[in-house]
Image (cartoon, rainbow, N blue to C red; front, side, top):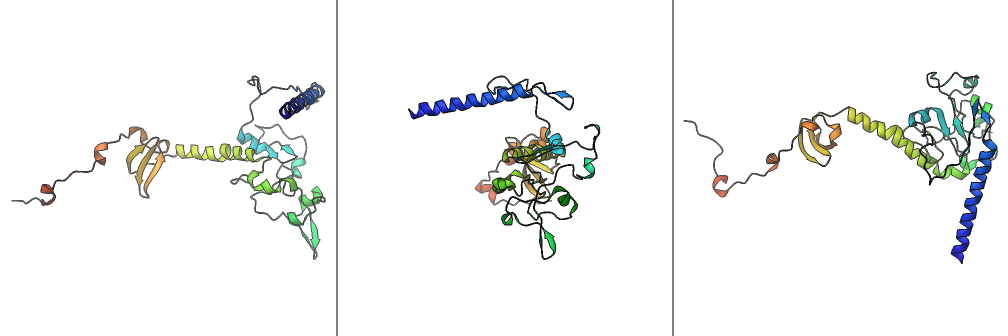
Length: 258
């Protein structure tokens, strides 16, 4: 009986969600935003999604988009080959192009300071223009101040949502991991493949790796990172241990000259 009730609740929730999507599609279709007609249509993930547009490249996304828990910023860049000219002078106020994170400012002993997250009530924040003109920033251990630094509901996951290389903040841990793989790990691996190592000697091979000898010693490297890997042929005779009999073990290695 309980299983039947749970299944009915799940079906009812699914129908309600589909109804809300249909209402949203009906209400937004035909709306014109910035000269472009909005066409909203629900696509069932179980059906063919080949017609759905591809996600933007990570390089473009990193340059133009900033995420946070309750705000998504999409901003033009300075390259006019990529983006059309700006229609306002907002960039004169936003020097970094993106809105700075909200934070409180208090005065203690005649000095303006930004209180720690634990000391803030989570309700009052300094106005944007004041935050933008004062040369003070929140003290934190992040490379770049996360937009949600003073958001209590996500404070425990801020570090996981930040890229450890460039410091960009994302609205989820998954997006931060995808960014690291696409923007930092993959290009670094590709750069290593383009800049191949020239070892003094290739000792042996295992799967797709080569044991290379250099001035730094022996090191296993991917065969795509080693120059001359295609020409390497493993000679097992060099790896054989010589067998010496007792009769020849005590023979002199020297040759007498007449």
